[in-house]
Each structure stands twice: as C-alpha cells, then as structure tokens.
Amino acid sequence: MAEFVESFLSQLAQTVLVVLLAPLMLGWVNQCRAWLQNRSGPGLLQPYRVLHKLFHKDALLAHNASVIFRAAPYIQFGCMVLAASIVPVLGTNLAFSPAADVIALVGVFALARVFSSLAAMDVGTAFGSLGARREMLVASLSEPALLMVFFTPLLIVQSSSLSSIVDALAHRDFAIYPSLAFAAVAFIMVLLAENARIPVDNPATHLELTMIHEALILEYSARHLALIEWATAVKLTVYCAIGIALFAPWGMVEGTNWLMFPAAAGALVIKLALAGTGLAVLETVSAKMRIFRAPEFLGMAFLFAVLGMLIRQLLGA
Image (cartoon, one colour):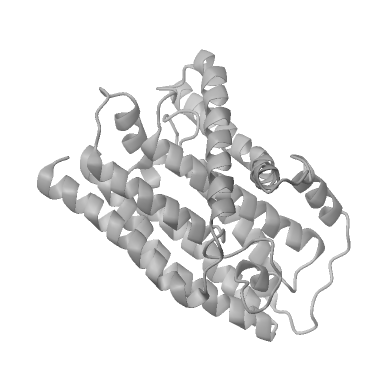
C-alpha cells in the first residue's frame, strides 16, 4: 500500500508539473522565435498573463450553442491533463501506467480533437466548419504516423506500456538504433502537424484561407478560450515530453527515489528548453505550406515511421 501511495504521489506531481510548466514552454518557444527574427518578443510569462486576463472576463456564447460547445473546452483540457499523467516525465514508476499504453495515449489525443471539431461545427459558422474539416484531414494522416512511431520502440522493448518502454530504454546499456532515428524524424513531423505549427499551420495567423487551429476557436471567449489555450500549451509540452521519453530518456528516476527528483527536474527543464529552441529554429527556417501539401508532408512522416519499424523487425537494428 505504501508503494502504491508513493507511485501515485509521483504521478500526481509529474502531472501538476507539466500542466503548470506548459504556458512557460509556449512562452519560451515564442521568445526564441522572436530572438531568431531579431525582435524583442513578448516575454516568457506572457502566456500566463493571457490566461489570467481570459479567466477574469465574462464569457459570450452564441444563442444556438449546444452542450457540446460549452463542454468541449473542459473535455479538451481534461484530455490533455490525462495525457500528461500517462507520459513519464520525471520517473517511470507511475501508479496507473499498466492501465494506459501508447495506443490509449493516441486515443486520448483523438478524443480531444473530435470534441474540438464538433464544437467548431456546432454554432454553424463557415470558419468553424472549415477549420474542423481541415483538422480532421490532418488527424487522419498524423494519427497513423504517430502509431507507427510508437511501434518501433514497442518492438524493441516488447511492451506497449510507455513507462515500460522508457524504463527499458533509459536504464539499459547505451546502444544506437537506426530504427529509432527514422522514428524520431517521423515524430518531429507529426509533432509539428499535431500542434498546428509551421509548416503545417501557423499559430499566429488569422487569415481564413490558411488557418486550421485558429478557425476552431474563433467563437470562444473568456474562460472557455483560456482552457483551450492552456490545453494547447499542455499538448505541446506533452508531445515534447513524449519525444524526450522515447529518444532521450536519460535522467529519468527509476522507482520512487525522491532524492533524485530534483536532478530529474533539472534535466527535464534543460531538455524542454532545447526542444523549444529546436522547434523555434524549425519554424523560423520553414515556410507555411499550402493545405493541399499537408498530405504529402504527413505521408512522408508515415513512411519514415514504417521504415523504422521494418528496420527493427527485419534487421533487428
């Protein structure tokens, strides 16, 4: 019983850490982009200021908005918090890790996307329906690629539990897997698409001909918009944490050794800072592609992921 309580507290602490650090991660990416574009930038704490402002405003809702429109922000935020609790961030000893594997994690992301698309179409605006169709187009291509990315480490460890995968990769002898290199490239491409980043989408635009994510949330305001923006930041942080867990898991705490958690937290902050810097560099040197090129981009990601899986399955590398 004591061991379960310790693992539960560890999982709770990791979840709270990710949720609270998510706006800071988004602020760091925006600040790095500003520096690379020779601008001063809004500051690291700007996402927190935006959330504080939105939570203190009065919400405006369309007269024909249904329960789905009102509940979708809470469902999206809850799904992202659940995803944050599944992914090992500081340690691998998570109380409920046996109940959630990589396939369930993809399902959690899909559930949030379905409700966001339904809510966008609920009030019947043209932009909401346009964004929902584009969002589902991207999802139909990115989710299979993400599953293929997970299958490569799954074949290495012979387990679909993300905690088991991370524990095995982090605490075994160092080895170079060419299959993981292909999976890493595919994962970066999926991360850009799933989080509405350049080149698939531009999170800073409001042009109706190009926007995807922004078209989904045009009708929201106040606390509903704050929850969606917070969920978006948590999703970006969770995806970065997944990439760290799969391809750079060193520094994770094995078991519930609380003395090692500060060092693991420091390593996590450094890894997230490097991931945010890399994301800012990719967005700076890339250009927004046409929406009709997105299937080619994500098809290439799926191909890289399948190549990684086949290399592991056929060559054992």
